[in-house]
Length: 246
Image 1: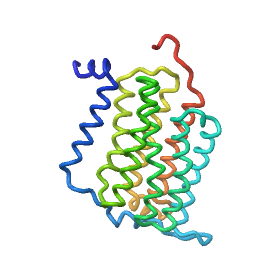
Image 2 (image 1 turned 90 degrees about the vertical axis):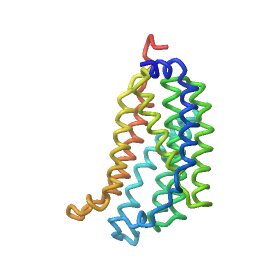
Image 3 (image 1 turned 30 degrees about the vertical axis):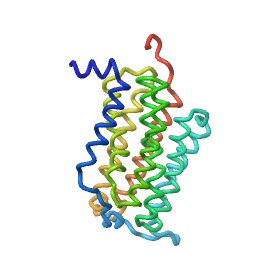
């Protein structure tokens, strides 16, 4: 209870403290190398001359959701970065799946780091402090982009793993500990659930495809992740200030 009270009383220093501690905790860990079997997806069918067709074409929803978000919310830095990231994820992931390897994977992961950084910043803006959330965007973007450059320079994915999972864990904690200032809080929960489902589908890619060889887990992963993006889009489209909440 004392810890929770401290978090609620001084959320911004606690958040930065968690960031620093978790980053330092990466140092004694062994390098995390990219498993080359990751590029061997279950569904490698070619259609209309497009290799890995379903893993390529299933990225279209990212482009649609990202474009819709940019048309409506491009004037705010956080939402502009978020929906730019979603939009570019559609292209980056399609490019990667046309020829899966480490070099093309870089362009798949780069726009996703924009999304991870912007989503955490948006939640901090909404639940904790608007100015702190806006300021947080810059260091998160810097860490995310640097994590991918570091991976290409050293083959070490430790920092990228942090850039992907720390924002998700922090988001869940903030949603649990801080009351909403806007309506539509259920959309954040839906986004988190869809993203968790996407990671599960990614892990069980081959097992899903083995059921009738109709669709793979990785293809469904793209659709689930895009659904998470759509939930965030609906949040911004529908949210209203809750009266009486400071």
